[in-house]
Image (cartoon, rainbow, N blue to C red; front, side):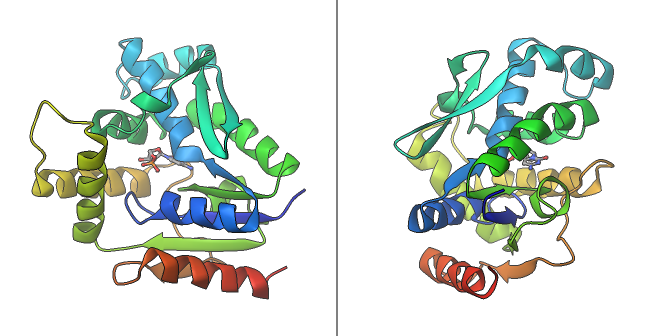
Length: 225
Ligand code: DC
């Protein structure tokens, strides 16, 4: 079992940016579990399965083989052998992922892969249930958060930079509403809801720079070996 850093929190709190930076500094691998749930969502979208149809989702999810590969320290998600990274970061896929990730069969399907990665490597893993369910004995647990407005602004900038929504103009209020909706879905689900682990350190990133947040987490790592 390697060293485990678990970072949880709502959409747009800065988890992936911070986790990538820390993984680079510590020479650990970065495991983006949200991307795995997004790959499953993409599979459902392509298969014309409604993410709210629990029975259909449970039946079809074993057909999605989701694996991870690393290229130049970047996580590549393979869906039935295809590199799907380019299709994962849209709002549509994020909202479907938020719905389908409430399905216990979907979670069970991805949990084994997440645990195996943490058994075989030193990891920085981010998601919603890492400190509470996936890595309950992680060396360091952090719960990152920020106000919904700040998170919406960050998402807006990310989407504009990626040109993911070229066709329709982006609206900050709409993005904030999507974020609030996603928070509610992620926090209120029955299985592995988004919540701060009892032993996680809470970090509000609203007024902190990326460098300040990562320095804080590196300091916490120094205290917990
Ligand atoms: O972090 P993200 O936005 O890429 O995650 C997409 C969705 O996947 C999120 O709304 C909830 C779900 N998810 C989850 O249920 N558990 C995780 N460990 C990671 C993500």
